[in-house]
Image (cartoon, rainbow, N blue to C red; front, side, top):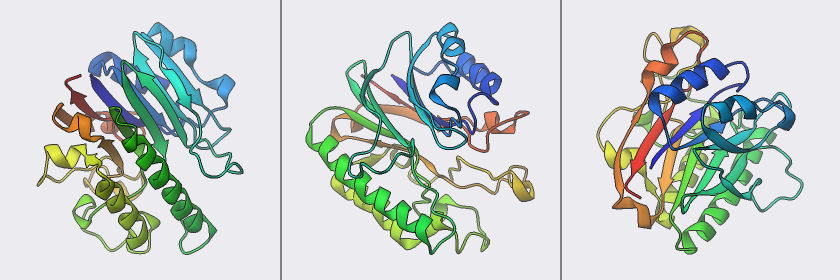
Length: 257
């Protein structure tokens, strides 16, 4: 099973980019973030014509998440992160696909920090930790994938001081990511590439793509049952360089399930 995550940064504006990549890469499951579309604006028909069933939760102008499955219909299990019934931001969706639980997330950015947006980021991270523990305790094969908006370690960002005050690199969210690993989750890309420099995001500003001034924000956490089944994975960097591209590249792993 080839599982991908892709912050598409406006699914309708970049639909041609998405369909081109789906045709090339042929992932079995895709987690999409930043749909930036209402539920009724989600391009269900175009994706169905490309061979993908989908579940999604949209939000006008911001956020939005979806799970696609090639030749199948994902079975929706949750469309919000538990823990705060007042939180209506579309940042989490969960579905079963071919016996694997797929959790797709778009974590809060948290900027500017300090401030209420950073506080929300940390509170959301605590809710994720609680729900992730429940998923792990279920004993099911689970993949948590998406844009975590956390740079886990200094080696996951290009050498710079311009991000020193950015929420993405602060000690508190990094500690939350480390606590996820301590629960028993495995960072799949780091498992595959323990020493490599890996970036998944390049800001549009200051020629960061051209300079390869990137960050690793998009991650796969896999449950214990799946670690021995992890076969391969990579970042489809070339997609980031195409006309009209998202500022994120698709990332994928392959599991022997």
